[in-house]
Image (cartoon, rainbow, N blue to C red; front, side, top):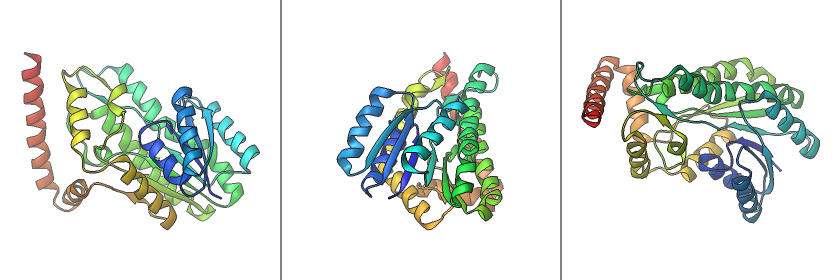
Length: 271
C-alpha cells in the first residue's frame, strides 16, 4: 500500500492528486492550513477507497514538516511519495511589487519546497527509496512579463529539483518536477497584485484551459510510477519551451510582443 504526503492537499491540484492515489487504495496524508477543507477531503479520500489523514502543516515552518514526517513514520512506518505542492501567486512590475510580497512568495513557493525536501530526505535515505514531487510551473520556464516574483519562485523550484535529481539518485530517491500552465485551481484567490483586473484575467485563463486538475494529477501519477523527471501537461506550452531552447531569438521576439501587449493593457486599466 503506497503512502503519500501532499502539502496544500486540501484544494486544487493537491486535492485532485490525493483522490487519484486514493483510488489506488493508498494511504494519503494531506498537510494543509485549512482544517475545514482538510476534513472534507479526508472524507472524499475515504469514499474513493483510500486511507486518509489530515495534518495541520504550514510549509513556512520546518517544524511542521518535521512533525508530519515523524507522524507518518510512527503511523505508517514511513512514506513513499512527498508532494511539495503548496504555493501562492503574485503579479506586478519590478517597480510596483513590494519587497514584502517578494519575501512572502519566496518563503512559501521556494523555501516551502526546500523545507519539505530537507525534512523528508533523511527518512528517504533510511528507507533506501522515495520520490519527491515538486510542483513548479511553466512560469519558471517561460518567464512571462509582469510576473517576476512568481517566475523567480518557480524557476527556483525547477533548479532545486534538477539539483536534487542528481544529488539523491544514488540513494534511491527519485525527483519529479511538475510544470503546468494555466488550469482551473483556486490559486488566484490568494494572489497578490496591484494590477487592476489581474485576478479576473488569471481566472479567465484558467477557465479557458482544456487541461484540468485531474489530468495534471494523472500525469504526475504516471511520472512517479515510471520514474519520469519532467511533467509538462500542456501541449502548446511544451512546444513553446522547445522553441525557446532551440530558436531562442524567435521565442524572445514572441515574448517581447506579449510584454508590450500586457503593458498596454495595464496602462489602459490605470487610466
